[in-house]
Amino acid sequence: MKDAIATVRKTREIQEKYGVYTKKSFGQNFIIEPKIVEKIADAAIQDPSDLVIEVGPGIGALTQFLCEKSDHVIAFEIDERLPRVLEQEIGFEHLELIMQDFLEADIDSIIEERRQEGQRVDFVSNLPYYITTPILFKLFEAKVHIDSITVMMQKEVGERFLAKDNEKAYNALSVISQYRCSIKKVMDVSRHVFWPKPNVDSMVLQFRFHSTYQVQDEPLFFQMVKACFVQRRKTLYNNLQAWLPDKEQVKQMLEKANIDPSIRAQQLKLEDFIRLYEENYETIR
Ligand code: SAM
Image (tube, rainbow, N blue to C red; front, side, top):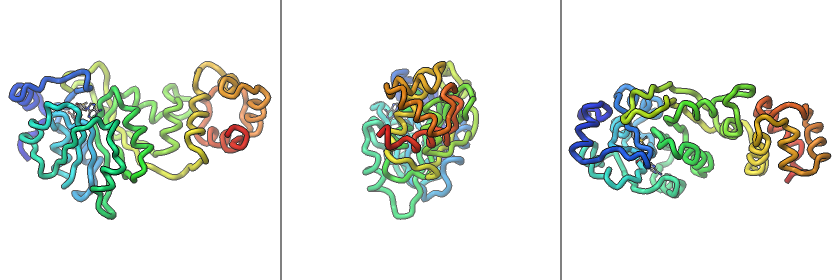
């Protein structure tokens, strides 16, 4: 491998050479610590034959390590200034660059067309923070199988994904993402390893899909979970009543699932939400 891109010196050199100064509107905070990118790549990729999908290669800090570890990395980027940098600094032997907004990409077809039989698919990204949740939900909804999702995000958002019932950060996002995936923390990352330095620290999480839970009509289940959390200070009964205006129906729903109407959504475990939904599916559908 040539010199690591993820250093202060190399990042400065590339920015000056190509005139690619960071753009806030694209959520550009480049990593300037090679140990961090190496650790992310190690956590994400198991074998050189893995098909790796990255969002936002930037000037290539993480991409360089991904291309070291995998023979085929597909990277989506929206900043038109960057292909020239990536071509010269990394080259396109292992890297396939797609210049497209990831949120608009047809990832099912793109992955399906390139994926070989039995090949693992790993998604990796130092996410553009302004679209963390939409990117993850796009992956959660993908039809094509993705083996692992290893992503850097703002620490505060990472805590929501990890939070369990009765913890401060626990909300609808925690319940919905834990319904779909098992989630583990890979590492905490200080704000000091980014250029420019953001105002917040970060965290790398790894998501793996599981099929432990399967309810009918998932969008309706997610709607119910969101409704339960609409006003955190309100009781479950009050929040559900705003969603289903029939008071008697809400009372019966809670009774059926054996849930105390005076508790708040943040006191319910994922399994409690599933029971509440399944016991009442016929009436709320
Ligand atoms: N991977 C590099 C690193 O770790 O240093 C850069 C990460 S930077 C936080 C986010 C990158 O995502 C930027 O390169 C930005 O241009 C790109 N980006 C922002 N929005 C995007 C979108 N909708 N689709 C694809 N790439 C996007």
